[in-house]
Length: 171
Length: 433
Image 1 (cartoon, each protein chain N blue to C red):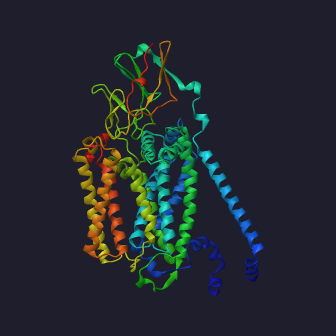
Image 2 (tube, rainbow over the protein chains, first blue to last red; image 1 turned 180 degrees about the vertical axis):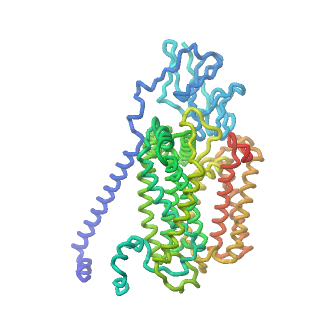
Image 3 (cartoon, rainbow over the protein chains, first blue to last red; image 1 turned 90 degrees about the horizontal axis):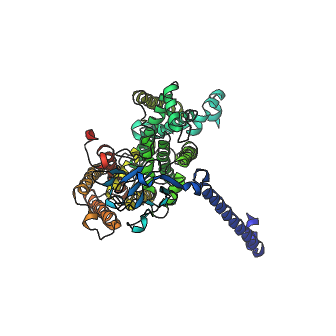
């Protein structure tokens, strides 16, 4: 007890002690930051083993003739819909409802996509007809090569509205 | 010291562990069953049952989307008592959520959350959350239609939390959608991270109870004589444990844990519902903008619960159920008001025109978020004012009636979500679902 009091009084020693304490504190903070950073990088969903490589992200869906003008065709394996406009343009829409992630179903009679979970509905271009869906269905770029329809699975794009640039024409 | 040496050596070693968890002597007045209903002890027993059945299940379960479902089928069909094992794990998991929740209500309604029991209360809240999370992570493992879509819906709720939501969801799922990385994460959380955290927190929880001098009792009972823990407390606990165990076994032999078809990402069942303890949240989501339903409201409730022990209140009738006669009658009024408000709220949001369609120019964050939120909070505020005047409540009684109101409201929301929501989550009668 007495020793501690004398230490406190003696400024040079006390200053040194405080300095050492501060160094410990800084080192501790650095160590904790490193540890947290390590944990975060471990948890980040970069588990590459499960990600498709760039070459595989381009999926062959079918040939152009399989999709008549004005049709909506589901591809359940890749979880998307191929929409073909009356003028022959292609549009690929994600199957996933932007509200809570359920899979939407195409209703041929009413010509709209219905979500079975919370009854959101979308028109044939994926635009919201009734809420609670907060935005249109996501779209994926369609690439047409030598009469084959391919979709780039790595580029599921969120959008606010329909724009003609989302369509792909057969050249 | 003399007392210690008076105990025979053999007995001391045999009951050492029990007497390590409990004090050697307890106050006779704390033994009354209707004071605690043995809920905390039941929760501890359920944790032990979960660990034992879970470890046994782990011998047969394979955490991969290809084989998880088959491993469950195999367990149920070709293993002796395999189905029974899964049933026990399933039903005691549900019982665990119920018992932990009721245990929380018991502590709240006997006023056992104030210092020195504040840390017990807060660790208890954390334990309740972990129990729910443990349930939720276990929900995915069978990889059937029920689990796949419940987890898809519940994790999509997360993405509505501002800023942090989407990163948290990505980390939890290990990608953009539920798949192999999700199963790996959930399996590890369910069988490692969460149970270990629960055990650590339980130790802290128990230690704080010991520090606070055991179970809370009313002032008039504080002078009651001390009796030996063994046999008086230990025997009572043993009876409660046996009854609970028998009930779980009975339910498990009568009702099977659900298992639907294997998960199919292309087809959602209609309706797709979250696990039952999240149905209140999903019901809220029908009425509120997602930011309010999954973030603002739950976060404020949680903050209020943590802050609860530290509200100053002069007079304290702790250790008595519902604190006083005044507390009982105000709690009854609050329960009735909660049920009434919630039913009116659900019906009016069903019958009145959609505010979003009515005012398309106003952003939905206002029409379905802030405006209903203000309506609900101002109703709450008026209710508190009314209760204060009508019953002249002190702070503890006021906290209690607000808590009753919220619990009853959430219960009504949950019941509506589970039993009154049919296809497309539209209102329906239970027999039409």
